Image 1 (cartoon, rainbow, N blue to C red):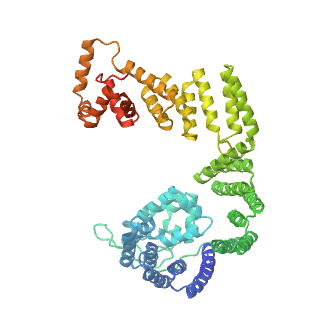
Image 2: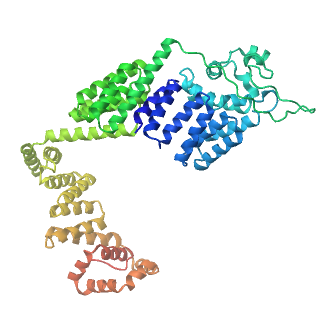
Image 3: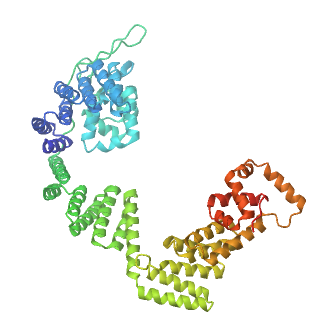
Length: 588
């Protein structure tokens, strides 16, 4: 409840029409009396009108409803500062900081309250630091001429310097931004740096004495020249900012009304009332066409309604208008990404990929990049699907077999590869055989790593296909990876225990392992020294004292069949290999 009034109030506030904003927020409070946000917004409006008593009343209501909301204490502190109740204002800011210690708004408010209470510095600058407080900042934020300055770090540094050191005022008088800020925030007559240095009172509006238009009376001085604690000046009306022209007022009203329609559209979108959302976004565009978010938001509604052509049309219009307005690159990128999403839904993946790439040239972000990668993957899959033809796959397989038999292994590789493309795993239950055949070709060509990859893929596709283990074990053998070859042959024998090729491969590998690790070519003395060194190894000692391993070693000398069974167990095989490498055990 109160969402519509809140949206209209926000728009009126942004346009500087505080009385209208108060009316809207008050209507919202009537509907939602426990909304701390509405009270907070109304407090800000009243403070902008210098109704600090009313702002204080609303701020107290905010912290009563939601005592753990830091912004409520910012409102409370600002209202108390406007009433020049400095101790209470500081207490309010400190309370907010106890909830959110890193809140910059609360920190700045506290610093400004402390500065104002102390007179804004010593000497002739007393009281000037308080000029650049929350109300001054609020005016700058609400005026289109100065709103952008607040995003500039050096301008913010200038205001902080002035707040803590008012005597530095003349240093900034030649800065056009500062001149504009004074005009907007205080309605001051702007002078050049030389004029200001000659007559600073005139720059403050004349006077300079007690009750003068320029501000507070100067503080009294003691005999030693130091200033007494400055007394806060009585509340005085400040000059209003220069009024806007009728054209500027009309434009501001159009913007505010359009923003209100956008907020209503957003609320309707969240409720999935898409027809209402379209009406509100359309109305916003009729009122003001200088904000492309109205177009991108309406495109999002069309997307949810599956009207992808309308989505694309709005996104293209947003990009074109954004170029004209020199809009933020992020907004243009958002429109392009949304267009890409619609193209994906329409199935036009090449166009979607091109659009996503354009979006990334505007602004690179993770979401668009992920969508691009997904579209590229889908297009690749789409192209692969279009290439599938099992008849041609079988033809290529037969051509590969013929070339293999004739010893034309490079040609056989080409045919097997084409057969794989034409018949991928999802349509070809015998794809593993193609990998096995190509692995055999790579073996013949001496391309052992490529062959090993194919053999592994063969086993992965069909773990019960024994020839895959034979191919893999043979490749590991020629690559002299005897340990891996023994494991592979052992895995194959689990599938088919009586396969003679696997048995022969295992036997050949054990023999090669003995030759490479068992001390072939060593003298008896060298072998004896090697064994003595190995016996000092704690791991070797643990293996030899293990009851299970002692039984295994006995089986090697008395029961060869049992020994072969032991070698099929990876843990036992690893320990046996350790003993072989140490020269303590010799297989074969």
